[in-house]
Amino acid sequence: MANTETALKEATTAIEGAVGAALVDYTSGMALGTIGGGKDLDLNVAAAGNTDVVRAKVRTMELLGMQDEIEDILITLGTQYHLIRLLKGRNHSGLFLYLALDKQRANLAMARHQLKRIEADLEV
Amino acid sequence: MASAVSPMLVRLTEEKATGVLVRDHGALYLVDGEVVHAESPAAPGLDVLLTASGRLPREGWEEAVAEAGVRREVGRHLVASGRLGCGELEICHLGALFDAAYFALTPCSGPTRFRYGVGHWIGRVRPVPTPVVEREALRRGALLDSIWPHPEIDAAPVVPRDPGPGRGPTRRQATVLALADGVRTPPDIARMLGRPAFNTLLDVRRLAAAGLVDTAVRPSGPPPERPALPAWVPEVSDDPDIALLRRLRDALEATL
Image (cartoon, rainbow over all chains, first blue to last red; front, side):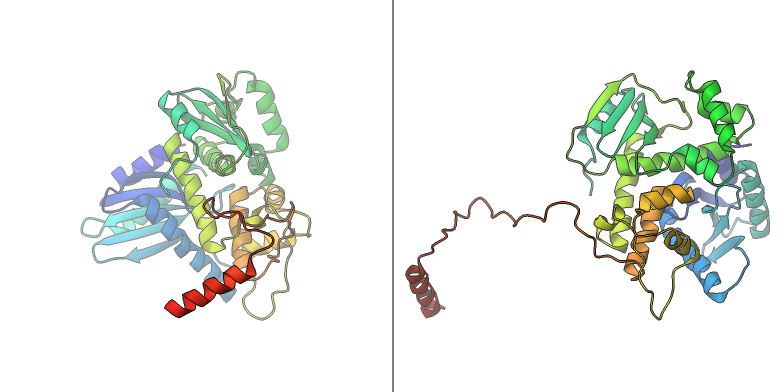
């Protein structure tokens, strides 16, 4: 049972290659918590912007009539991976974990697996 | 916009004040200059958010308030008694705090008061630095205006419009429209759905931009007065000197 801060700390320390992480409410676009990032990656801006990514995908699935749900979204850049994991809480539909990874150092499969565990720890 | 939402709040933050700041549309509770809780009549409280989703039975909430309300530790008690997870409480409380703070910090003309020493029975969950709360309130206002720049619809009854051909509402928006009976305002609908009020404002502004709700807001107050002339314009006479104006016009035309 973790709080937001410890969960995010866990995400950036336990996951190899993590450069920053945020917990985001994707309806309002607000970051409930951020860690890492720095001047090259403003996580508050990333949080707000990526809500549009999630919203567009949710909408597309609705238009396609797919009754499935999004587990995660991967965006591959030249030097980074951006991983968006939608939380399936009892009370909190509408939150996602956002993780930026250094492509050189990260193990994508491992990162996805660990992010899943962090979600469970957060108990949302 | 870089200016502060409330100069008084800036001062209270600097002096690390503890108490409650009461404004027209809500209240902010401070402990040592940080925001620990916020309330607004427009925003559903933590109890509504937690019980409407079925996460917490109403009795569970009431018991916790009865048991720990006097000690002002309801938040901690909800976790200690196993009713809520620690992360869960924190996330839900932050959601409610920022939601109410947005309304509490909307520009208002009424008095702003601060009562020193007043605390809230929810207790300390996760304090948020005041500048973060202010920045978020400004971001939210700008986000709403970027979607549909007419704030009048935020407090007006939601009236669905015939969608016509084209894309209909999203599933989420459809739940809002289903409760729009021409009387309920966005905050009323938010409370019924157990969602933060700001999220419903976003839904309604997006619906307005998509032409799915009526946007002709019926004026609630007296019609706006004629815009005042700048002070440097002298009072215009009811009986202007027509002859003088004609001579002026002719002179201007001759020189241009």
